Image (cartoon, rainbow over all chains, first blue to last red; front, side, top):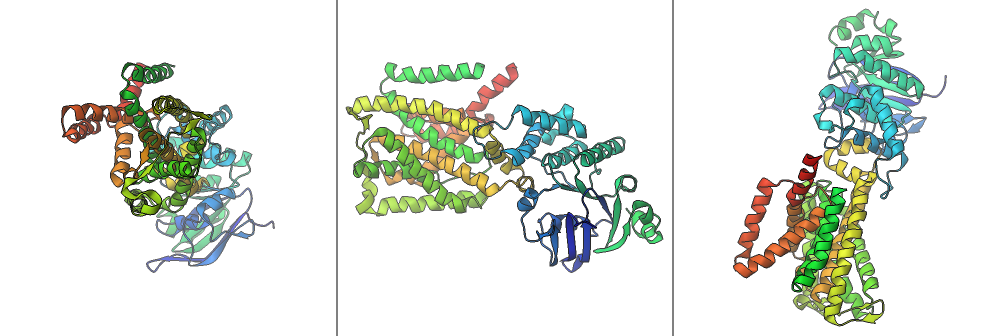
Length: 248
Length: 308
């Protein structure tokens, strides 16, 4: 077996005595689409926060390509090729949609140039291609705060993709997206991830989305991994069906 | 295109104004000097940071001119470059720890440091001349010694040229990825961090640029007045710069200069009418804030947007 792209070992985190992670270990391989499901408040987002350096675990470690990144900042981890889309979209709300995209692109290809404009033809084309991918091509000149919530979510994902990551962490990518657009988004997203060979770890509550797109599923419950396996295996587990899927 | 034409007409207007009314030359030079410093404040306002201490950089460069002249440097160009550099270096030192703070803490710490600067200028009598200040002799221009009136004319037109050149450079910076990242600090620092962008570095660069701009203003003011005094660094001077930036509008580079010109001309007109000129200035400011939230420059940009 090859070395995992991201590995969390024996993580322990508690908030006011409530355990969000209680000795959890996970690993994600290159090219894998790993879904994490579980009830609200079970610690799924905490895992993403730990993996991206936003919070530090009480104990345990996170390795990226075998290197310890537990104590690194979100900025340092992002520069190592880990991007994140948030449950609540994190955008530059006063700026245009395309400026959000171009700033993300500039972060990887020339942020420190104080002379050339942000808007170059190359960056503009790349930004438009990504916006097209997530279905926001018509919104490119809108101020991002004026977008409906579902579109803000899509923009947040597009911004993360603009970083050209090797691993993308998505927190409920389809929440706030209309039922009609949900599968269109996931199809486009998965196709982009496959084309660019990006591994993905996504927290999701929509079991149809998980069943259709995840290559492996982790069931998170009260800070522990309750079950793990292919979607068909996990969704045939009676305990999972009763305790997680029923309430998810 | 229309904006460029309007700006060119405005600059030409400023250039011929002192020919028609020579007494305006000093007022306009001082207004441009303050415009540079206000532009420095406006740069930081893009990131949502209000500095109530930028007069310290204004004073730092002005005093640098006086000190450099004292040690025998008399060339205008060299004095300007070295004094702006001094302002930038002071900005780098102060900014390296102030850019970690936000909101009221940033404003107050700037104020505190500037007041330390003011106290040093006022109390180190042997070095700075205390409250009497230091003289700024008339420098040479490319090795040519000029009489004071001729130098003041050179200074005015040089300031005007610098206003255009520096203004264009700052506009370029604000349109660059660094400038956009600076505006993004105001809206979402978390996302910037997750893009791998070091917020502290973005802010430190902006802080140094803004300090250098304030320094350029201070150096010009020092030459124009012919003396530097501790009041250059007093907190009311810093407040005045914020006032100019807000009055002019932070939507674009011209705002700072428009605000400075408006305020200086208003002040000059108001003192001829009443001793209570502060009342007129204060009321004007209230009107601008209430009815022109984008500042005076906002009026022009709105007009242009609606005509498109």
